[in-house]
Length: 142
Length: 142
DNA sequence: TTCTTTGTAACAAGAAAAGTTACATTAAGA
DNA sequence: TCTTAATGTAACTTTTCTTGTTACAAAGAA
Image (tube, rainbow over all chains, first blue to last red):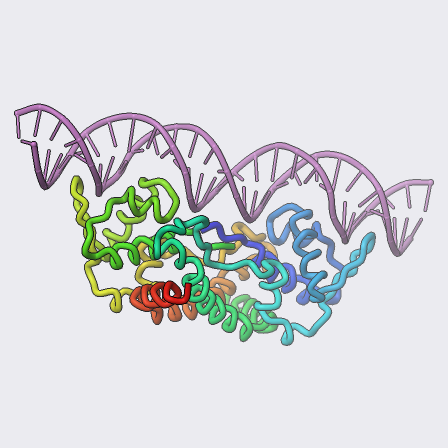
């Protein structure tokens, strides 16, 4: 179960950009907030850019979201950074001479897919704006 | 971002045991069907055993399920082999001097949890008996 | 032109999963 | 009781994937 932090870092990046909408922030600044290397940030921003979620241009620190935050779901961000990767891994090369071996992959693929789709459906209902709102509300309570 | 193949191997093991209920099968036999090492099989069987899903005893090849297959869900198997591992990983040590940094973990933990719970709820509805049924149905079509 | 920043490639380090070896323990049967 | 065959586990290696790092080209602003 190797789980990447790309999604959480990507959400962090997007939230930070939106909250600092007035200021120009650099990948170095974001990296300091996330606590990682600037290249890790640029790499993820590059994926977000390819998915049309944000804009940036070389040489100049001018990054902004391409859609209002209440139109960007965690699913959008998730797909941007994880692509069509399947959550559930299925073992390779089961024995084709066995009834289970030659059918298990297709069957599990079908079942696992159902589970993944419900999870993705849930992510579609969670918007970046809500995440930002929750960040601000938690901040008040601190 | 993937769940290990432990779940798929575990389901394979359970289905194989149930389908071969009349015969005694060894971890070596199962390993040949899964296409892996017998120790990998025993390791996973040990976890299934600890969760009360199957019985086995040292020295003797006498393995069987402890519940009818229509009372064992993929969720049961999933929890047995993956425990309480979270699907979505959140980056560690974000900067506490930043409003996003000091709140992102709590917020994402909350949101990701919702997504994980829906996924798990779906797994609860998929029973080992269905998986076995699908294996048999696919077999007819081959 | 100089400085700063982005965009990427290439590689290193780290962590987790899977595979392997080894061996103690247990049971069955000769 | 001795032999054989199986499980249960520990320890170690290999592999794979993610994350971190270095390096540098390209772009823009002053």
